[in-house]
Image 1 (cartoon, rainbow, N blue to C red):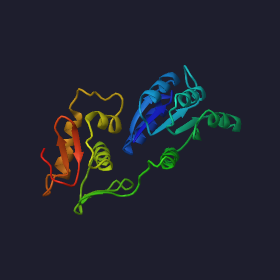
Image 2: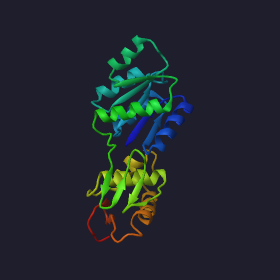
Image 3: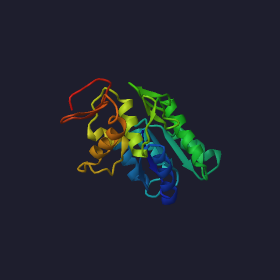
Image 4: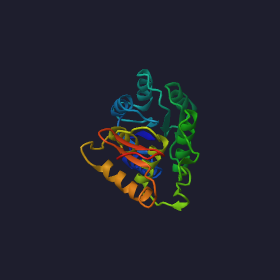
Amino acid sequence: MRILVIEDERKVASFIKKGLEEQSYAVDVSYDGKQGEQLATQNEYDVIVLDVLLPVQDGIETCRRIRQSKVNTPILMLTALGDTEDKVRGLDSGADDYLTKPFHFEELLARVRALLRRTGQDKTSLLQVAGLVLDPVTRDVRRDGTPIRLTTREFALLEYLMRNKGQILSRAHIAQHVWNVSFDMESNVIDVYVKLLRQKVDKDFDRALIHTIVGAGYMLKDEDADD
């Protein structure tokens, strides 16, 4: 899952970004409304977290312009303004939900998940391919009953592969959904992480599940394949 945070208070933005990344979301951050609008209309996101009081272009106008661009990504609006009128303005501009500052991160996370459920994207049930089982809620990963310990990024990569089992995933697709817009496509980071993941998921088992599709990308599937 990929989330855009448009928030000019850098401490708040950093707090939200860190918390979401710990939940294995890929997060992009913008510090003004105009740049946020550009990111929202040029990239594919699962949720947008949008502050109301922004420089260059306020959150209400940013939300309105995003919707005018036919972007239907769920928007959670953050506001320090508690008046009903301000909340109504936000919802009328196209926001799906709002959260008043200050807030607990747990509530923001719950609202993000609620928005994902509305669009059918919050898949919290167990993922299983052959004997490999991943629990998105508890973050438990096992293969044939053996626990597998993964880093946050390894977990996000494996989850993305499992949600798209049987499909060839290019490095660009993986970068977009597991990393963020600042990812350097010239680097070999994705290949390194796939190698690390293979060491944990495939090495000590009879059958490989993670396959390289030469010239195309990677695939996780429950059949033998030539790498």
